[in-house]
Every structure is written in structure tokens, then in C-alpha cells.
Image 1 (cartoon, one colour):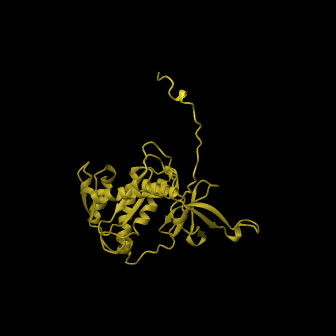
Image 2: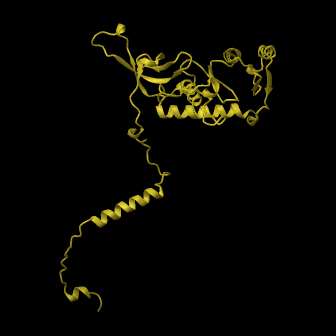
Image 3: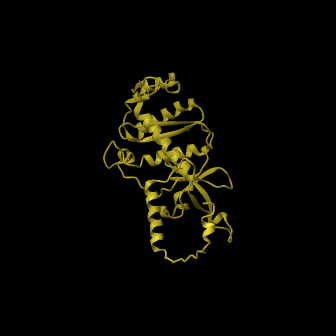
Length: 277
């Protein structure tokens, strides 16, 4: 990435289940950390779902082809496929997933008006949301539902970057202190069912339980329009021009006609034909 995240991460490791389209992301400080995350994730999947991982496909990068990783694949009976270098179409599933997550995360940052250093939080939130959207793999099902055999709940979901109010426990506030403090919503913690936020006072993010967090009701109809400056290259659309013409014709038709009289003063004929001799 062009900029380090708030936690100091520089890289995004994205693992995709080709059967369901479910994604799992990890933020890395160095590329060598990918080996640990891959082995831990494969071990967790095989233990929780009682299924064996049969195939791993990657682009042949050094961090994906270490000796210890190859030994792990051999011990687990996992086949390893390496795609052709600089041919992204041969690893289309992963490349398409990365492009989708980056596109969604970029849109989240732009809408929330946050700096690029929040790219890790935006990427993880995009992965969380994408796993709960309908998947083209199975009709009318999300990747979360395909993997867990249950429909995901979206009642707790918030708009990335929105203002939230975090309830302060009674034990940590006085009688006249405010009951909540404001913060910025930065994503979800799927394992602990907590929500990540950041307060401007601290300048660093933390997490709380979903039950202690509230946000204003969403009403997209009241959102103010984007104020983009008018440039020489921007031209009004044909529909807008027709609308302006209709408005101008209506104003002209409704305008009151006031007769005007103009008095002309007669001049001598000699002045009118002066110079004709």
C-alpha cells in the first residue's frame, strides 16, 4: 500500500474460498507474516468445519513458496498450484476479489472523508460486508450462509465512518457527566462480535460491545448533495438545459404585459436631410 495503516500495516493478505466466495483478510506489516496467517487459517478451517483443504493456488510469490509452507502442504496432503507469473487471468478468483475489496474500500474512504491511513479498516469492513452480500456461486445465498448454513444478521451494521455514540458505564462517570462519548465507526470484530471505533480525543481506535453503541438513524434522503466546483470542462446535460428552457418560457408567459408609450419629438426637415444638397 502507498501509506501505512494506523496499526503500521503495509500489506493486505486476502484468502478466498473458491467454492463459496467467502473471504478472509489479514493486514501485514511485512510479507513474511503471511506464512503464519496461512497455516493458522487452514488449521482453523479444517478443525471447525471438519473438512480438508485440498488445493491452494497462488501467484508464486516468495512469501507463498517458502520451504516451511511446502512442508506444511505436504504434511496436510494439500496440492499446491502456482499460476503463470504476470498473468493475472490465471488466478482470476483472487485477482477479482482483491480488485473488488479495493474498490469498495476506496469508496468507503471517499464517502467518510477519511485519510488513506484508514485503508486497513476500510478493507476489513469491505470484506465483512462482501461476505454478507448475495454470491454468484449459489443463487439467493450469501458466502456467509453457504459456509455457516445460517443467514447472517445485518441489524448491527453501520455506515463506515459515521458518527457513533459509545455508552459510558455508570462506574466510570459522575452524576453530571455525559452518558456517552462520540466516535467514528471503523468496522467490526467478527470473532468477538464487537465494533471498532476511534475517538478524536485519543487518536487511536478501540472496540466495544455492540449493545453499548448507538448511531443516528440513517436517512439518505436528507444527505446533502456533493458540492463540486464548476469547471470549464463540465457542461450541463441536455435534460437540464431543456428544464431551464421550460422554466424561462413559463416565466415569460406568466409575466404581466405592460404597454409602453414613447414620445418622439419632431425635428425640422432641414436637419433630417442635412448634407443631401
